[in-house]
Length: 258
Ligand code: CAA
Image 1 (spheres, rainbow, N blue to C red):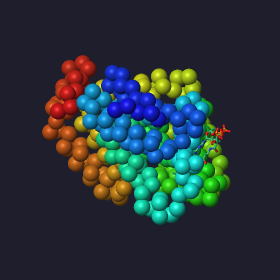
Image 2 (cartoon, protein in one colour):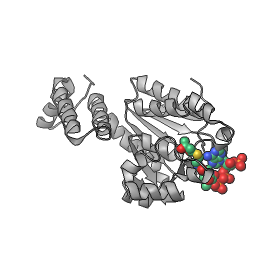
Image 3 (cartoon, rainbow, N blue to C red):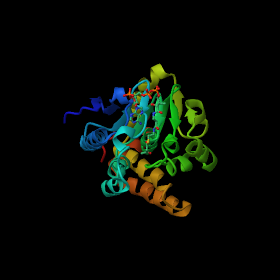
Protein backbone atom coordinates (compact mmCIF):
# COMPACT_ATOMS: atom_id res chain seq x y z
CA UNK A 1 0.00 0.00 0.00
CA UNK A 2 1.26 3.52 -0.84
CA UNK A 3 1.52 5.88 2.12
CA UNK A 4 1.93 9.65 2.21
CA UNK A 5 2.55 10.43 5.86
CA UNK A 6 4.69 7.47 6.87
CA UNK A 7 7.60 5.62 5.26
CA UNK A 8 7.71 1.86 5.71
CA UNK A 9 10.84 -0.20 5.11
CA UNK A 10 11.24 -3.92 5.66
CA UNK A 11 14.86 -4.97 6.00
CA UNK A 12 15.83 -8.47 7.07
CA UNK A 13 13.12 -9.30 9.61
CA UNK A 14 12.46 -5.77 10.84
CA UNK A 15 9.74 -3.38 9.64
CA UNK A 16 10.58 0.26 10.32
CA UNK A 17 7.68 2.71 10.24
CA UNK A 18 8.92 6.30 10.08
CA UNK A 19 6.38 9.02 10.82
CA UNK A 20 6.84 11.57 8.06
CA UNK A 21 5.05 14.92 8.37
CA UNK A 22 8.18 17.05 8.80
CA UNK A 23 6.37 20.38 8.39
CA UNK A 24 4.10 19.57 11.33
CA UNK A 25 6.70 17.84 13.53
CA UNK A 26 4.89 14.56 12.79
CA UNK A 27 1.66 15.75 14.42
CA UNK A 28 -0.75 12.84 14.44
CA UNK A 29 -3.61 13.65 12.09
CA UNK A 30 -6.35 11.32 10.86
CA UNK A 31 -4.44 10.38 7.72
CA UNK A 32 -1.23 9.54 9.55
CA UNK A 33 -3.05 7.49 12.18
CA UNK A 34 -5.00 5.62 9.49
CA UNK A 35 -1.79 4.86 7.62
CA UNK A 36 -0.01 3.80 10.81
CA UNK A 37 -2.90 1.47 11.64
CA UNK A 38 -2.74 -0.09 8.16
CA UNK A 39 1.07 -0.42 8.24
CA UNK A 40 0.98 -2.14 11.63
CA UNK A 41 -1.67 -4.59 10.40
CA UNK A 42 0.45 -5.30 7.28
CA UNK A 43 3.57 -5.86 9.37
CA UNK A 44 1.69 -8.10 11.80
CA UNK A 45 0.47 -10.23 8.88
CA UNK A 46 3.77 -10.33 6.99
CA UNK A 47 5.51 -13.61 7.90
CA UNK A 48 8.89 -12.09 7.09
CA UNK A 49 8.52 -9.39 9.77
CA UNK A 50 9.48 -10.44 13.29
CA UNK A 51 9.83 -7.04 14.98
CA UNK A 52 8.57 -3.52 14.28
CA UNK A 53 10.18 -0.13 14.97
CA UNK A 54 8.19 3.11 15.05
CA UNK A 55 10.33 6.22 14.73
CA UNK A 56 10.16 9.86 13.67
CA UNK A 57 12.72 12.48 12.67
CA UNK A 58 15.73 13.91 14.49
CA UNK A 59 13.59 16.86 15.65
CA UNK A 60 10.37 15.06 16.53
CA UNK A 61 9.09 11.58 17.14
CA UNK A 62 5.68 13.29 17.16
CA UNK A 63 4.61 16.63 18.66
CA UNK A 64 1.17 15.28 19.58
CA UNK A 65 -2.25 15.08 18.06
CA UNK A 66 -2.74 17.56 15.22
CA UNK A 67 -4.00 20.66 16.99
CA UNK A 68 -4.99 22.37 13.73
CA UNK A 69 -7.18 19.42 12.77
CA UNK A 70 -8.75 19.14 16.25
CA UNK A 71 -9.29 22.79 17.12
CA UNK A 72 -12.82 23.19 15.70
CA UNK A 73 -14.18 19.82 16.72
CA UNK A 74 -17.13 19.54 19.09
CA UNK A 75 -17.71 17.07 21.89
CA UNK A 76 -20.15 15.21 19.62
CA UNK A 77 -17.52 14.98 16.83
CA UNK A 78 -14.96 13.59 19.25
CA UNK A 79 -17.36 11.20 20.94
CA UNK A 80 -19.08 9.88 17.82
CA UNK A 81 -15.78 9.25 16.00
CA UNK A 82 -14.25 7.91 19.25
CA UNK A 83 -11.25 10.04 18.32
CA UNK A 84 -8.03 7.98 18.62
CA UNK A 85 -9.83 5.01 20.19
CA UNK A 86 -9.53 2.73 17.16
CA UNK A 87 -5.98 3.81 16.30
CA UNK A 88 -4.75 3.41 19.87
CA UNK A 89 -6.22 -0.07 19.99
CA UNK A 90 -4.50 -0.92 16.70
CA UNK A 91 -1.10 -0.27 18.25
CA UNK A 92 -1.72 -2.22 21.42
CA UNK A 93 -3.39 -5.11 19.58
CA UNK A 94 -0.35 -5.64 17.35
CA UNK A 95 1.01 -9.05 18.35
CA UNK A 96 4.58 -8.63 17.14
CA UNK A 97 6.98 -6.68 19.36
CA UNK A 98 7.14 -2.93 18.68
CA UNK A 99 10.04 -0.68 19.68
CA UNK A 100 9.62 3.10 19.77
CA UNK A 101 12.87 4.80 18.70
CA UNK A 102 12.44 8.37 19.93
CA UNK A 103 14.53 11.43 19.08
CA UNK A 104 13.42 15.01 19.71
CA UNK A 105 9.89 15.82 20.81
CA UNK A 106 7.50 13.09 21.96
CA UNK A 107 4.67 15.24 23.26
CA UNK A 108 1.00 14.63 23.98
CA UNK A 109 -0.18 11.91 21.60
CA UNK A 110 3.47 11.43 20.57
CA UNK A 111 4.48 10.46 24.10
CA UNK A 112 1.33 8.35 24.34
CA UNK A 113 2.10 6.56 21.06
CA UNK A 114 5.62 5.79 22.29
CA UNK A 115 4.15 4.39 25.52
CA UNK A 116 1.82 2.09 23.53
CA UNK A 117 4.88 0.44 22.02
CA UNK A 118 6.51 -2.41 23.94
CA UNK A 119 9.53 -0.39 24.96
CA UNK A 120 11.17 2.92 24.20
CA UNK A 121 14.75 3.53 23.17
CA UNK A 122 15.50 7.24 23.44
CA UNK A 123 18.13 9.41 21.81
CA UNK A 124 19.85 11.79 24.21
CA UNK A 125 17.91 14.56 22.43
CA UNK A 126 14.49 13.12 23.32
CA UNK A 127 11.97 15.26 25.20
CA UNK A 128 8.80 13.74 26.59
CA UNK A 129 5.77 15.69 27.74
CA UNK A 130 2.01 15.81 28.22
CA UNK A 131 1.40 19.51 27.57
CA UNK A 132 -2.32 19.16 26.71
CA UNK A 133 -3.21 21.27 29.75
CA UNK A 134 -1.75 24.27 27.91
CA UNK A 135 -4.45 23.75 25.26
CA UNK A 136 -7.31 23.62 27.73
CA UNK A 137 -7.68 19.82 27.56
CA UNK A 138 -5.99 16.78 29.09
CA UNK A 139 -4.19 13.77 27.64
CA UNK A 140 -6.53 11.55 25.63
CA UNK A 141 -4.73 8.31 24.81
CA UNK A 142 -2.87 7.25 27.92
CA UNK A 143 -0.96 10.25 29.25
CA UNK A 144 -2.76 10.15 32.57
CA UNK A 145 -3.03 6.35 32.75
CA UNK A 146 0.01 4.65 31.20
CA UNK A 147 2.38 7.42 32.24
CA UNK A 148 1.21 7.11 35.86
CA UNK A 149 1.80 3.37 35.82
CA UNK A 150 5.24 3.83 34.23
CA UNK A 151 6.67 6.71 36.27
CA UNK A 152 4.38 6.96 39.33
CA UNK A 153 1.79 9.45 40.49
CA UNK A 154 3.99 12.34 41.54
CA UNK A 155 5.91 12.65 38.29
CA UNK A 156 2.83 11.94 36.16
CA UNK A 157 0.92 14.68 37.99
CA UNK A 158 3.88 17.04 37.57
CA UNK A 159 4.09 16.34 33.82
CA UNK A 160 0.32 16.56 33.22
CA UNK A 161 -0.32 19.56 35.50
CA UNK A 162 2.66 21.75 34.59
CA UNK A 163 3.05 20.53 31.00
CA UNK A 164 6.82 20.51 31.46
CA UNK A 165 9.08 18.37 29.28
CA UNK A 166 11.22 15.54 30.62
CA UNK A 167 14.63 14.98 29.04
CA UNK A 168 15.98 11.56 28.09
CA UNK A 169 18.12 11.20 31.19
CA UNK A 170 15.16 11.84 33.52
CA UNK A 171 12.97 9.57 31.39
CA UNK A 172 15.43 6.71 31.82
CA UNK A 173 15.79 7.39 35.54
CA UNK A 174 11.99 7.36 35.88
CA UNK A 175 11.48 4.09 34.02
CA UNK A 176 9.76 5.60 30.99
CA UNK A 177 12.47 4.49 28.56
CA UNK A 178 14.61 1.36 28.57
CA UNK A 179 17.84 2.93 27.26
CA UNK A 180 19.29 6.26 26.18
CA UNK A 181 21.80 6.38 23.34
CA UNK A 182 23.61 9.14 21.42
CA UNK A 183 21.25 10.55 18.78
CA UNK A 184 23.49 9.43 15.92
CA UNK A 185 23.29 5.78 16.98
CA UNK A 186 19.54 5.68 17.72
CA UNK A 187 18.49 3.68 14.67
CA UNK A 188 21.50 1.37 14.84
CA UNK A 189 20.65 0.60 18.48
CA UNK A 190 16.93 0.13 17.76
CA UNK A 191 17.65 -2.12 14.77
CA UNK A 192 20.16 -4.10 16.82
CA UNK A 193 17.52 -4.69 19.51
CA UNK A 194 14.91 -5.56 16.87
CA UNK A 195 17.26 -8.05 15.19
CA UNK A 196 17.98 -9.69 18.55
CA UNK A 197 14.23 -10.09 19.11
CA UNK A 198 13.80 -11.39 15.54
CA UNK A 199 16.16 -14.29 16.34
CA UNK A 200 13.84 -15.60 19.06
CA UNK A 201 10.87 -17.90 18.68
CA UNK A 202 7.96 -15.65 17.67
CA UNK A 203 5.74 -17.77 19.92
CA UNK A 204 7.86 -16.92 22.97
CA UNK A 205 8.13 -13.25 21.96
CA UNK A 206 4.35 -12.95 21.63
CA UNK A 207 3.92 -14.76 24.95
CA UNK A 208 6.30 -12.26 26.61
CA UNK A 209 4.16 -9.39 25.28
CA UNK A 210 0.95 -10.97 26.53
CA UNK A 211 2.40 -11.76 29.95
CA UNK A 212 4.02 -8.36 30.60
CA UNK A 213 0.98 -6.47 29.34
CA UNK A 214 -1.27 -8.62 31.53
CA UNK A 215 0.63 -7.34 34.57
CA UNK A 216 -0.97 -3.93 33.99
CA UNK A 217 -4.47 -5.34 33.79
CA UNK A 218 -4.74 -7.79 36.66
CA UNK A 219 -3.77 -8.68 40.24
CA UNK A 220 -0.34 -10.12 41.03
CA UNK A 221 -1.68 -13.60 41.85
CA UNK A 222 -3.77 -13.76 38.63
CA UNK A 223 -0.83 -12.41 36.63
CA UNK A 224 1.54 -14.98 38.10
CA UNK A 225 -0.93 -17.76 37.30
CA UNK A 226 -1.31 -16.46 33.73
CA UNK A 227 2.48 -16.33 33.33
CA UNK A 228 2.92 -19.82 34.76
CA UNK A 229 0.28 -21.28 32.41
CA UNK A 230 1.91 -19.61 29.40
CA UNK A 231 5.25 -21.02 30.56
CA UNK A 232 3.69 -24.50 30.84
CA UNK A 233 2.01 -24.11 27.44
CA UNK A 234 5.31 -23.34 25.72
CA UNK A 235 6.38 -26.92 26.51
CA UNK A 236 3.94 -27.95 23.78
CA UNK A 237 6.10 -26.19 21.15
CA UNK A 238 8.93 -27.53 19.00
CA UNK A 239 10.80 -24.32 19.74
CA UNK A 240 11.04 -25.24 23.44
CA UNK A 241 12.58 -28.61 22.51
CA UNK A 242 14.94 -26.88 20.06
CA UNK A 243 15.93 -24.10 22.50
CA UNK A 244 16.76 -26.47 25.32
CA UNK A 245 18.49 -29.01 23.04
CA UNK A 246 20.62 -26.21 21.54
CA UNK A 247 21.65 -25.11 25.03
CA UNK A 248 22.76 -28.62 25.96
CA UNK A 249 24.51 -29.16 22.62
CA UNK A 250 26.23 -25.76 22.97
CA UNK A 251 24.91 -24.45 19.63
CA UNK A 252 22.68 -21.62 18.43
CA UNK A 253 18.99 -22.58 18.39
CA UNK A 254 17.12 -22.62 15.08
CA UNK A 255 13.63 -21.53 15.99
CA UNK A 256 10.84 -22.27 13.51
CA UNK A 257 7.83 -20.73 15.29
CA UNK A 258 6.27 -24.12 15.87
N1 CAA B 1 -0.33 19.94 15.83
C1 CAA B 1 -0.29 20.61 14.67
N2 CAA B 1 0.81 21.28 14.23
C2 CAA B 1 1.90 21.24 15.01
C3 CAA B 1 1.93 20.55 16.24
C4 CAA B 1 0.75 19.85 16.64
N3 CAA B 1 0.68 19.12 17.77
N4 CAA B 1 3.16 20.71 16.80
C5 CAA B 1 3.87 21.47 15.95
N5 CAA B 1 3.12 21.78 14.87
C6 CAA B 1 3.50 22.60 13.72
C7 CAA B 1 3.56 24.08 14.08
O1 CAA B 1 2.26 24.66 14.06
C8 CAA B 1 4.49 24.59 13.02
O2 CAA B 1 3.76 24.71 11.82
P1 CAA B 1 3.78 26.14 11.01
O3 CAA B 1 5.22 26.28 10.58
O4 CAA B 1 2.83 25.88 9.89
O5 CAA B 1 3.36 27.18 11.98
C9 CAA B 1 5.48 23.45 12.81
O6 CAA B 1 4.84 22.27 13.34
C10 CAA B 1 6.77 23.64 13.58
O7 CAA B 1 6.44 23.88 14.94
P2 CAA B 1 7.00 25.13 15.77
O8 CAA B 1 7.25 26.29 14.89
O9 CAA B 1 6.08 25.35 16.93
O10 CAA B 1 8.41 24.52 16.26
P3 CAA B 1 9.22 24.92 17.57
O11 CAA B 1 10.55 24.24 17.42
O12 CAA B 1 9.19 26.38 17.81
O13 CAA B 1 8.41 24.25 18.79
C11 CAA B 1 7.22 22.45 19.89
C12 CAA B 1 8.32 22.85 18.88
C13 CAA B 1 7.65 22.86 21.32
C14 CAA B 1 7.07 20.94 19.82
C15 CAA B 1 5.90 23.18 19.54
O14 CAA B 1 5.62 22.95 18.16
C16 CAA B 1 4.70 22.70 20.32
O15 CAA B 1 4.53 23.08 21.46
N6 CAA B 1 3.83 21.86 19.69
C17 CAA B 1 2.59 21.42 20.30
C18 CAA B 1 2.83 20.36 21.35
C19 CAA B 1 1.52 19.95 21.99
O16 CAA B 1 0.82 20.74 22.61
N7 CAA B 1 1.14 18.65 21.86
C20 CAA B 1 -0.08 18.12 22.39
C21 CAA B 1 -1.14 18.06 21.32
S1 CAA B 1 -2.74 17.61 21.91
C22 CAA B 1 -2.69 15.92 22.09
O17 CAA B 1 -1.71 15.26 21.76
C23 CAA B 1 -3.93 15.30 22.67
C24 CAA B 1 -3.81 13.84 22.98
O18 CAA B 1 -3.40 13.45 24.05
C25 CAA B 1 -4.28 12.84 22.04
